[in-house]
Image 1 (cartoon, rainbow, N blue to C red):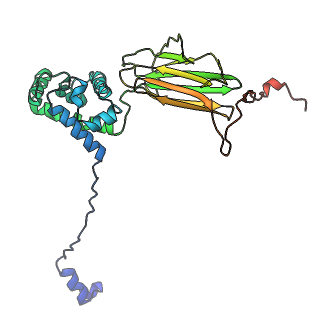
Image 2 (tube, rainbow, N blue to C red; image 1 turned 180 degrees about the horizontal axis):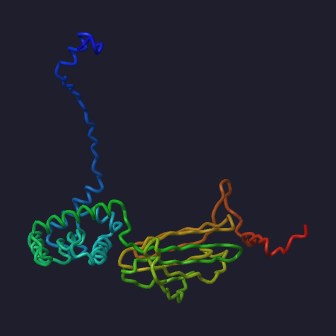
Length: 307
């Protein structure tokens, strides 16, 4: 048979021998993700709040430094208000995990201990206490992630833009907020004079941000060259959660500088002042003020070509 197939004795013996087992050693590489220190600190704070006697006031956040620093921007009152505002936004999810954490902290569920509040939550939502604890635990982690990533927690946005050309300043104020937020109308001062500016929000919300918007393009204001501020606008917007302010400015005159500052009392101030140039002790502080060039004429306004 081997001769007919052209096999030699070595090949035939190899064919008749049992199959050999081959041992392959595979070394797996395990990647370990280092826990984020800020998230872990926020987790500890959130768990400590839940273990306490209940979250009922800003004073219950004493000692929770990371939570006050990140969520309240250094203010216990703002941290507490922001946490309460989170409950308002998650109230529509009866079985939601974030809502479960907030309820078992004492914002809704009764009890001066965590065990009593878990029992109250379980009775209210018709689940056992283990389910209540699992939901609350997952809500703790979800909130820590939200706070760690500095999500704006439905924080209102304020946009303050200042344009200067010639002797005039054109201030523009735009407000953006979540439709579910409790709205409080801002107060606006121009050069320390209170303005009558009723803000009306557009409907429906923006598809991009899901926020509603209200805006004012104020009348142009004449610069005051000899005053401490050539121009000043103050906006006080006392929302439940501190607004996030963004300033935009465009100065045609390179001697001018726009500055903005926010205060702990919900006040935001933008000013136009004289600036300075490198190598100069002072800049010339006399009008006229530089202006932007007029926009170029469009082709249509120039009429038909004669060439």
